[in-house]
Image (cartoon, rainbow, N blue to C red):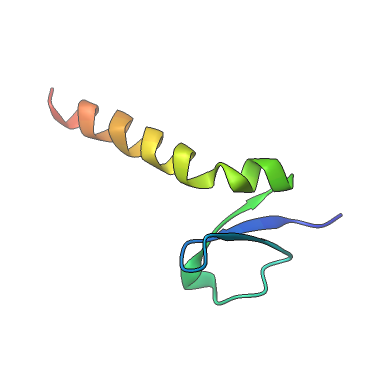
Length: 54
């Protein structure tokens, strides 16, 4: 079963991590999940930042 990765440099989804790990977010189970990787990262960062205000 393939894994999918989002490449932050090329903004492309890769199957089975073809680029250097420093450029990748993942792994994800589906291509669609990988396509939304940056949205998930942004949401997690916002949640983390809100937690710092306490």
